[in-house]
Every structure is written in structure tokens, then in C-alpha cells.
Length: 245
Image (cartoon, rainbow, N blue to C red; front, side, top):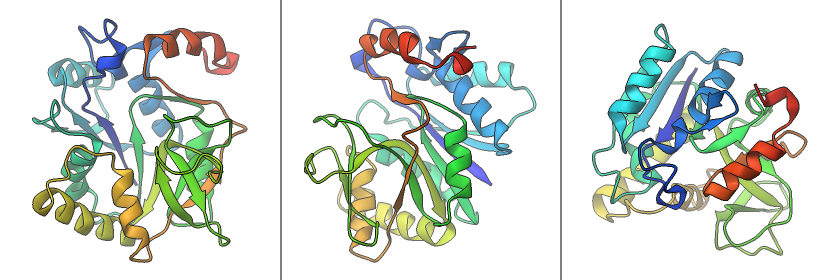
């Protein structure tokens, strides 16, 4: 199994913390976000990793190669990182995994318990995402499901009242879904020039083609998206003791 980590963004909302380093190299405790993500994958026996880089990519690549000299990692550089969103980074990475039976996709700005990956891997559905059920606001990527527990809407703009929780940015995808997603992204990026949107828009478009995600409730396990300096300060207070090191 392979994992894709999307780590190309500038993270302008985190300045000045990101003036001299990518967001994922910011530390919580003794380890950076990227270290924590890679360590979580290794703990779950996922040892082939694709990292899409952008902002200060040389620093990120040097860090990973120094910290994990034996890691089976492939770097893909998103040269258009300053004008595109994560959908473009995902599109760049997909050709590397189209032969895989399943993969894990992760955003690089999540602080999370490694058990969340295990829960997704053990889930009965082929295509699923980690869901955190909590009080929602405008900024979260929210999830709405139908009576079959299939996700029918996933976006920042869907109804807060109807949403069952937040997608934290970790997904498991099957081979069939990857093929459908690649086809959809080819259409969106090459023909519609939709390269500056969130990749969840592609997920929503695939629903009309019968391709669904199922939510897996991971609310019992710590997770937190880090977007602002305040988030980083808050994370130091909120992170459980067993994850602090």
C-alpha cells in the first residue's frame, strides 16, 4: 500500500511561522507535523510514500531524506503551488498510484492520533474517510450522508444543520475509485481549468457517477487541523499526553 501526502501549500495564514519553512515542518512538541504523519504511516506498515511538495520544496525534501534515509519516498514538485490548490497536487500524484489496490491520502497540516489510520484500514468499506463529529462552523469541510450512510455532500459550504461532522483530511481509496478520480481530475484540470479548488469538489462530482465515500467516525481519537498561529498554540494545550513526544 502507498500513501500520498499533500504538502505544497504556502500556508499564508500561518505567517510569520511559515516565513522560512513549509507548514508541515513546524513542530508540535519534539516532532514536526510531517514527522508525525510519516511516523503514523510507518506504525501502520505503510512504507511507500509520495509527497507532493511546492513551497520551499528543497528544505522539505532535504529534511525527509536526512530524517528517514531508508524511507521509500517519491517527491513530486508542484511548480504551480502559488496559484493552484490541493486538487492540482492530487492530480500530479495520482499516476503514481493507479495500479494500487488501495491507498491512503492525507493532508499535511493535520495533527492526529495514528490509530485513525488503523481504523480506516480496518473499515469494511473500500472508500472511506475519517470523520470528526463536533460543533461545526463555516471553515470545516463538512459531510452530509444519505440513508445508506453514503456521503452525498462534502464541502465547506454545505448545510451545517444537515452535516454529521467534519472530514479531517484522511481518506482510504480503492483501485476503482482511483481510476474514476483520475478521469474526473483530467476533465476538471485539463478541460475546465479547475486547478484552484479543493479536491473535495471532485469527490462531490463523482457521487453523480455512483462513486461514494463512507464516513468512519474517529471522534474518539484526537485530530486537529492547523491553519493559524493560534491553532498551533492551542494544539500544544490540547494534544493528549501520549502524543506529545
